[in-house]
Length: 341
Image (tube, rainbow, N blue to C red; front, side, top):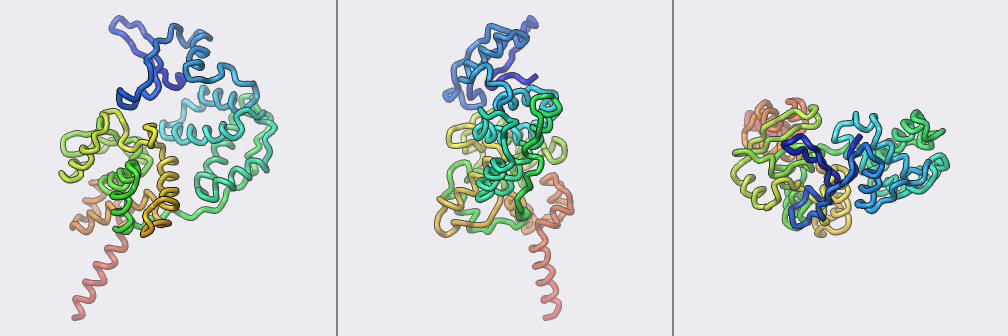
């Protein structure tokens, strides 16, 4: 069973295990909360109520409410079987569900209410709207099987149509404007994405502790956490090291210091481009995935082969060819014209 939020265990040389609570433990020392030793063990009921009070939560949410079911879901073997990335994604959307319907009896939620919430979110984030419904549907299915609900209100809620995420590289002007004028988290996203060529779901997990020699020791989630050493140029290393981020603090954090998830950084980029970006790039139709394509194009223009780029970024040759197809087509066209002159 996972420990409550902010709780961690320390095993002494004697073998004795102690439990402590501290908010913001992943942040720099000055930003962390008070360190409190918990005078109980997880097998004792007092442990859970004590931790709940430290987190400012009710120790016993009303039975049958979404808040109660979400807590049970996160303590289940089903949840424990999810990968860390899946838990991060689910945790984000369960937070939205709890915010919307936390105190409502789960069996009373209507399909119309779910559709209304989906449509409101779809107006700005259609992919997130569909994920909200999928996570709700999955949790309710588990709750029925475990005896906490009698019906799945999300079962017949359809998904909204979405466009396939573009694989087009960012225009140079857009990338430069985000790096120069964007808030710190988006500026770093643009720089880190172009420098490393990695998926946004992995970028939000990068931190200085991964630095080694002339690069980063990373894990590629799409390849089941495969370890990969990613060499970077001296210019890239100088810029990234210059951010002065604490060793165990993610490079990409929200303005309040909390870590970003893939969903939150996507939403942050989309809303900033739509509302606050400089007029010259406002409304630009780009996604974090386009940074991955931009990294491949940079390497291709520098004379690297498809095989070399695949080895550098830890991706398939087919994916590299997809990202760089425009550059390769232009090269062939110029070569053909040269042969005709």
